[in-house]
Amino acid sequence: MAVAKNTICIWYDRDAEEAARFYASVFPDSVVRSVHRAPSDYPSGKKGDVLTVDFTVCGIPCLGLNGGPVFQQSEAFSFQIATDDQAETDRYWNAIVGNGGQESACGWCKDRWGLSWQITPRVLTEAMAAGGDEARRAFDAMMQMRKIDVAAIEAARRG
Image (cartoon, rainbow, N blue to C red; front, side, top):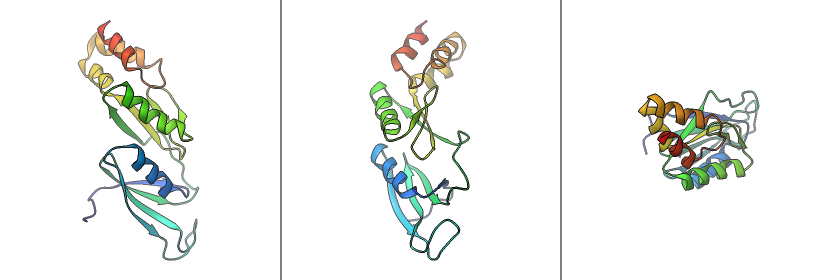
């Protein structure tokens, strides 16, 4: 299998394999492709420890790097997952938050490893693209939410 020309590298303290396996269990078109162990000791690990994990999340190639505690995740990077309805929104949100993650605002949450996710129903994206009063109403409704409520966004779109 050819290596992707561009791959997202995500820094983990030490749980890259656990995180990748969790993502593969939750999201479609996601898989753990390979796990690579350190050939010798390194600053945050020992020979034989999991060093990197090749995986995909919703078809996006990623490399999980167990780099130690030096760098932390921030909202400056997030996965945005488009959902088709409330059931799909709930499924992903509940999987992330229910597995040691935490809720944030406006459809954002963090997984137990600190990685940010935007669980974004397409109805919200479509409302924003519509512009004008429809976008304003949907935006104002979203600003009051943690997990996005599809019915509330649809109602806001209608006015």
